[in-house]
Length: 77
Image (cartoon, rainbow, N blue to C red):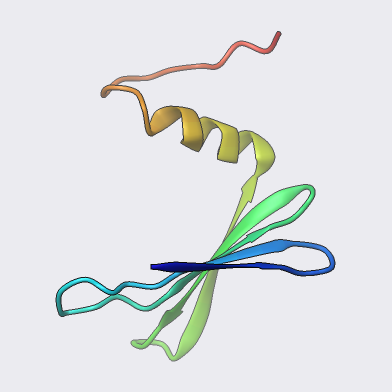
């Protein structure tokens, strides 16, 4: 399950783990103009962990989801 919200400067997608136990903490994806951040609460440290991806990394991740194992480079046109 997930939610989508449009904020002033970002689109926010929250991924909710509604599968079988044990469940993982929700993941919040913030899509800004110049980057995407992923946030998830870590109960071991009682802190939210944030990962920042450049738009190039987001593009590469999207491409990688549909490819077999290997090493790739995307040509700029």
